[in-house]
Length: 557
Image 1 (cartoon, rainbow, N blue to C red):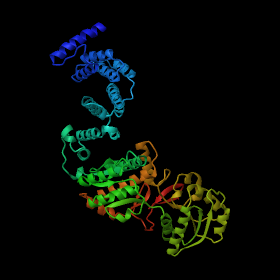
Image 2 (image 1 turned 90 degrees about the horizontal axis):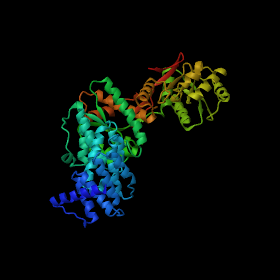
Image 3 (image 1 turned 60 degrees about the horizontal axis):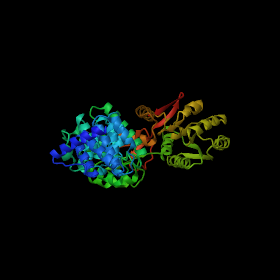
Image 4 (image 1 turned 90 degrees about the vertical axis):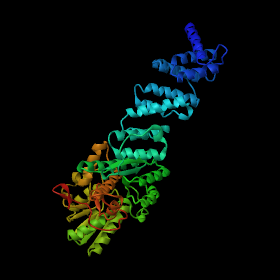
């Protein structure tokens, strides 16, 4: 073996001399190693291997010996001997960041033969700053090659991995251009131009048309899909995409919903808002997630007159901004008012008793029910509270029975309702029952039986709700995503639904026309129940109402 190495080294010396390179027995080990690196970069791994081994034989204890061994491993890799390369790398232990990046790069190159995902994961630990130009080019080329091999839905997940962002955006632009999704290709192209102004000059740009036509218009989903708040944002995004997918199935022309990840960063949020405002194809924005983010986005959105709906902002400060900035408001506090109006106006009743638990919500609903009944000329003749968790309601029932009410309002959960209702029958107080959305649960039918027959109550979001819109949403969400939806997923679904309702009424949707439609939109009955945009101070009976009829829960038109 030593003889062979000596012969190869002699040949190498001759070749180096012919090329103007000189090396001899007196050459410094650093000169030999540098020559090996040049040979490797010149695509001559055989000569490079001889030189790396020569350097190691001369000074195996040199601090640079680790990088020379990594160079040897690269030579074996280039010669097709991956196992030998891995064996050498396993012994190249280092804490030096430059050496570690080069070692990880070679590991990623080897892993690429079996798994692009594994190779990309190794590349995330490679720092381009620690590589020379030759190895940086290899790392970038490897990154782009492996991104091409993974599913398009997985590509965005690599965007925040160290130096990957530009190449992820380039890949997404290329992919969407190739499949004819011009809206998304344009979107990613604009993002590249904003974040990396000269990137298209360096890396090229796919050939696609960018004419602004009605069919190319889209809606931006602006949420922190990674980073702080992402666990909630993903749920909202799922609900919104479900609404858009269902709309697309039912309509020949439908807008696209395009995701924009704020990464939980306020500065990035403002950059994205500015970019979207300047893109005429973006006609509306769903998001952001929080009240503070919505307030931050409000001024640039208003300046561009681009409609913005936050599905989950809760602050009434957002309402004071005015069109075209909105937030979804899921009405809850006026359920009692809606039931009161229905009981007096539709059912023709005037004398009521109330039995309620001593909780803040139930107490508020009892008070609101009384106020609306009295405003409409009726009377709450008796009101009795109980401690949460109580199961014996004899005292409360006998107390209100004394006043002979025509009906009883029970702002309680379904669990309490199925316990109170049989006791009312037992103590011979058989009158119509009214409740709030706590009743809207299949437990009511399983355990309430004949005792809740004819009861009327409001509907709101709940996994076990039998309200048709909510039940359909829960079913389709579960089928699409393999998990139960949360309330904020339903809010994303409803906010998207309201925007799509405004969209479909317009022959030629524009930002200003959509904003006007949203400003005058009546209450919307979706998966979460009754929804409005902005602050809802009205009390009205226009609320999804349910009743028990022949052992089934049905909606009341």
